[in-house]
Length: 324
Ligand code: UDP
Image (tube, rainbow, N blue to C red; front, side):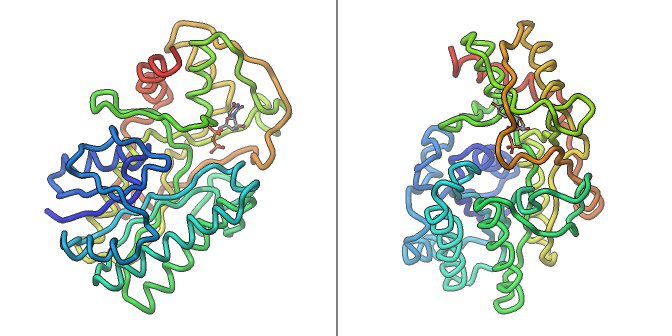
């Protein structure tokens, strides 16, 4: 078993991954500045509150704990906000990552799993999207992730830093038994907002009904956060056993429309979802579905929590409490 440092481990996907890594017997330490993460999402002894920008302190931590590999989640993630404050996004996501990579170089840590995103593809030419599709982000958030991905390619060549870059599709669901859930502030994601509408009676707005899809609403590839976490476990195993740098999409390969997700929420909750129809949201492509065959073939990964019913049912208890 290995010593793993998880940056941003107090966040949504990070905390679910920390839970699985710990269950696998790894010695896991979380580095988080709690700017968006939650203290109670991580067992107290595992949490180190520290900024990624403190290169010296991060270097000392990596050395003192004899870290074998890093899983790097810490980043700002709101697409809309990134168009309002691009400088802040580039500083935090790109410069923050560079500070971490400098610390890793100083401490001699040469294995990294990086949180990337389907947003690096921008408006894809076709779906399902393979990893070989053009990198063409359409917002600053996606550009920050693409920039870090390219930096990692150079660090592989120049420094021998082996990395696995995971391009997430739509993360959702929760691990109720582990006491973990989704709670972004402000909340912008579809499933929590549909459930908020159920609980509060305030209608959710469906963004656009005139997309070139069968029912006119956007199609996305929804992947349960525990299946995403499992992809990180597989990536860590790959690196620890000496595997080379890789890039993988993480999605189910199956898409659902906004109307289909709404129907699933009504079915699971047994209540109507109050909703209104509004205009399209800026920057939303009609359809984003992963070709995840590479991850399945190379790392033997398979989603087993990601039927739409499983996703919605796992999210409901925590979202019901959250919005009550
Ligand atoms: N969406 C919506 N109403 C909302 C939030 C989201 O209709 O209040 C739609 C959005 O346009 C997209 C899908 O739900 O087609 C998923 O959006 P989300 O923000 O959850 O994830 P994204 O695809 O932007 O990563």
